[in-house]
Amino acid sequence: MVPVVPRLLQSLRFNSFRTPHPFSLISSSGRQWRWFLVCTLWAVGCKHIVVSLLLSVELSEFQGDELRDDAKATERDTALRMALLRLAGDFGRESRLSLQRFFGVRRAPVISTGSLKLDLALGIGGLPKGRMVEIFGQEASGKTTLALHIIKEAQKLGGYCAYLDVENALDPMLAEAIGVKTENLLISQPDSAENLLSVVNTLTQSGSVDVIVVDSVAALIPQCELDVMIGESKVDIRSKMMTQALRKIHRSLYHSATLIVFVNQVRANVKSGQGFGHTDVVTCGGNALRFYSAVRLRLMRKGLLKTEDKVRLVELLFVIKNKIMKKKVVF
Image 1 (cartoon, rainbow, N blue to C red):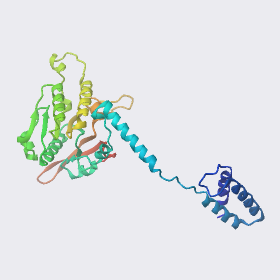
Image 2 (image 1 turned 30 degrees about the vertical axis):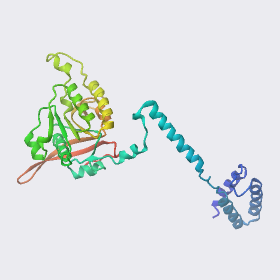
Image 3 (image 1 turned 60 degrees about the vertical axis):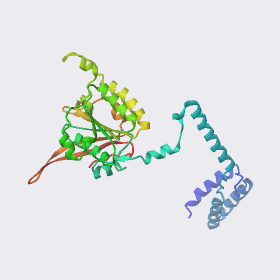
Image 4 (image 1 turned 180 degrees about the vertical axis):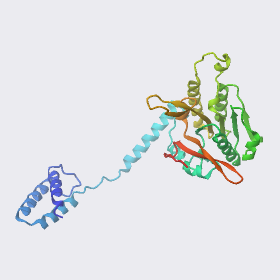
């Protein structure tokens, strides 16, 4: 216990010049007298008495906490209610604050992906409703198949789904083989990117559609690009158009439980200054989609697994972004 004495002496030295607290058990004059007594006992060699005395001083220095004032708590609650009522009166109904909204996010309804491993990797049992999700990867990596499985799971719960086929590549027989009820599936092939995004916003505002799949972002063609001849130079406004449209769609999701799935492709991006042959991949449509997406899933082809009678595609799925559960998982 001897090594503890210098620390206790230092603590007592600082406490002897401290302003006494109303709940303190020792006054300022009492501290100075004990400090003199400690020095005297230490000088004559009574170290065990000094240690006992210092420990008693340390225990007596604990100060009591202030009691809860019910009057102040009631006053704070009343002031908070008045502030919320004032906000609702000045800015309308949409400005009302509610703690239940923040707790409700943790209990957000989800739609299964059709894969138990992926549902577990997402941490909440599926994809959250009322959010945007981006599924991207190389061609023929299973993006459309995963989107169709999401539609199948939503239809199992009795929900309505919409499939916006921009690539004009949806195979009804494949969808039915997966388990999608095509007779209850809304299918559209808009002629321009502006019309497609308007359809997405309108369906989202209605709140009657559970899942909207856009396949794919890379195939979106702005109207201005359709009006020019092939070969004419034209500024690519797809990123600007996506930014403007996603702001409106994200605003519509505040009052809707629609899950919007954007299927996207990747492009090679050669980075200069990082060595010969160094390439990276980027998604199409700019950075707006990657910002507004609550979940981003990347599919990668690993190879082929050959057995006696079947040839299967081995894939990797990365959870690149997950705002609901802050973690990255690969399986």
